[in-house]
Image (cartoon, rainbow, N blue to C red; front, side, top):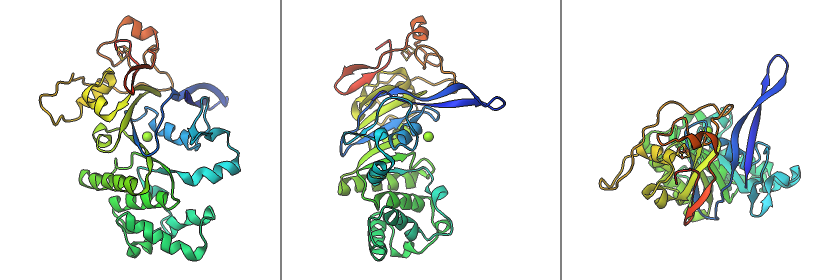
Length: 313
Ligand code: SF4
Ligand code: MG
């Protein structure tokens, strides 16, 4: 609810704060148990910061994050440790977070020991069971990270998150570094795990064609603000925000008769340290008017589960 995360910019010489990067600038959304909420936007839109602030890997600047009714940012260190296993993060590149000298089975089991969830003698069985559910086997338990392909490494990343039996998984660009053929396999694995374990996902991606296959609802972020949220079908059939339309223009349409405005984005995303006034998208929006430069559009309810921040809508 109204989540903000600002990072201070320090001037090197005086070590004084000279401004802020408004990575997440007052956004609100909810994720229902068992659903997959897709968060999309170009790199630099603040998606990863949202994920990390939900998990309290960053302290918030303002607003609140509620998990099962509990305000995550109000918990003591001890309370946070207790609920941590229930909320897990999967990264784009799990390899960078794996110790090259630790066998992957042991790396996956470590978290179980850390959280005191199982005794040492019980860990191997539990890890092998999770590896098997991720399409790996006991053979892989004793191998080292460098012996795995990119797709297999992401299976390890998923297994490591699942071993703690979480309820919520935040997956940050989990297939972006993979070949397209492997992407499909990993997306299928995400879906399979959700069906068998009743998981809830926040799935972060810059690619709408990736979230299309997995998400029930989608939020579109731009420069730290939420521009539009809607159900997947509504967003693809009836996108209302010009930025969403621009992102969709880059996705191939399977139904040729489906009419869609094509908007080609010009230029790069502006710096979140110095975002445009009014509607943050106005510097790249083909429909921008004088009002757009001055007034911040309200994030308004425009239809069933459909919210948009645009003066035109
Ligand atoms: Fe474009 Fe104005 Fe809508 Fe922003 S508010 S998306 S600038 S039309
Ligand atoms: Mg990111």
